[in-house]
Image (cartoon, rainbow, N blue to C red; front, top):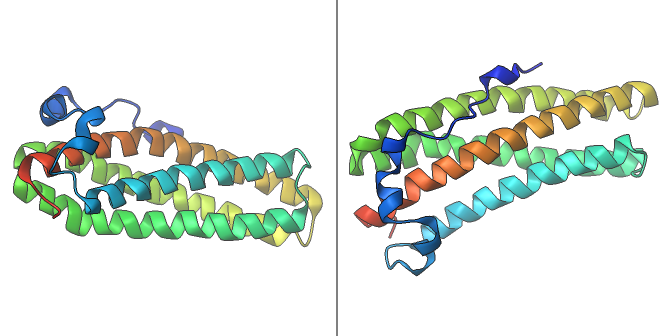
Length: 188
C-alpha cells in the first residue's frame, strides 16, 4: 500500500509565486490573456476533483451499506476508470508538452515544474494502488461480501489519498502555470 509520507504537504516555494502576486487568481477571468485553452485546462482539474470525490463518496455509501453491490460495481468501474485514465493522460500531456512550453517561456519556474512532475510520479503510484484495489473489489463483489467490503475500504483509503494529493498539487499547478501563461501571452 502507498506510503503516505511521500505526499507533498508544503506549497511551492515563495519564489515560485512571483507572477501569482502580479496576477492573482481572483483576477484571471478578467485578464485578456486568460484564453479558452487555459479555461479548459482548469475545467479538467475541476473534473478530477469531482471524480475523486465521487469515487470516495461511492465507497462510503457501499461501506455504509447504502449502495447495492451491483450499483457500486457500476459506479466504481465507470468513475474509477474515468479518474485513472484521464489523470494519466492529462499528466502525460503536461509533462511532455505543457511544462516544456512553460519552461521555454520562463525558465525561472523550472524548480516548481520539477516539483509538479515529481507529484505526477507519486500520483502514478497512488493510481496504480487504487486500480489494484478497485479491481480486487470488483472481483470480490461477485465472490465474497466480506472480502469486497475489505477491498472497498482500501479503495476508500486510496480515494482519500488521491483527493489529498490533488488538493495540494492542482492548486500549486494552477497558481504556477496560469500566471506564466497570462504574463507571456501563451495558449492562444
